[in-house]
Length: 61
Image 1 (tube, rainbow, N blue to C red):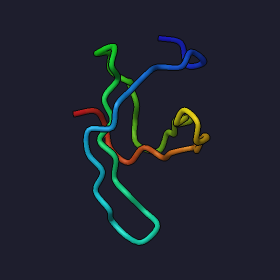
Image 2: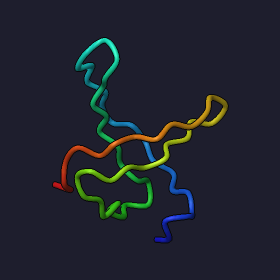
Image 3: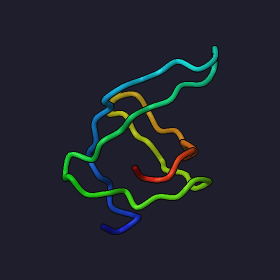
Image 4: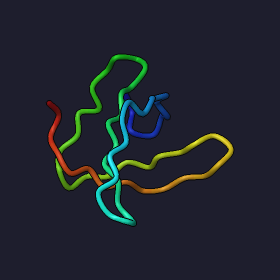
């Protein structure tokens, strides 16, 4: 996986933490691991809506 190539994913679960924060459980449809570490971020795009930088708060499980 290259960091510049988009990967299609699905949101399995959304847990509302506060009025402005949510916890997302995201799965890559390719079955690959994102290979992330806490403190990194990903640029999340939603077709027809827009993009947002999202902070990663946990290591892969």
